[in-house]
Length: 161
Image (tube, rainbow, N blue to C red; front, side, top):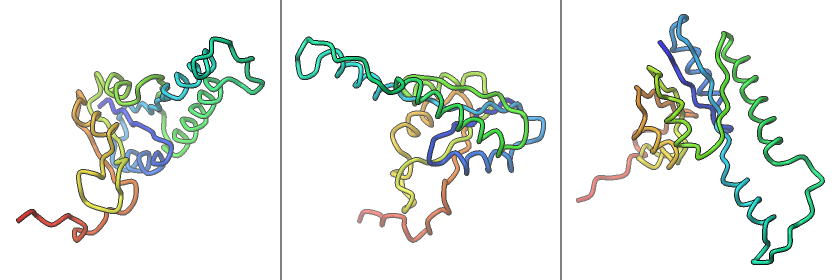
């Protein structure tokens, strides 16, 4: 069984814990983190021409944003593999998060991911836009986990009359 575990900064611990508990010992696990490139694109645009000006800004004195995000991704993947407690392939991708996750899931038998929306209610809003896209387009089965204790059934919105 080939399993892709999608790691997001604020929910990766529970996603890895569920995978460690539920996956068979012989599962081939890939831990995936996607670095969104939207912020880098905006920053690059700002540097190229601030508010329509054509003068290039001086190079930044701090490490480039890409280096910072890649270091953070490596640290997150290493911590996740340590928590998983078994061998896993570590994969970092860059781009539009939802599309990169779907592309990485090609050939997988199962994708493990966490809800990323409103965690206080049992509703469709408990799944954010990135996760919704992935669920709708995943080329494999999906295991969707609650990052916290699931809310009570009483949080379901009333049916329209």
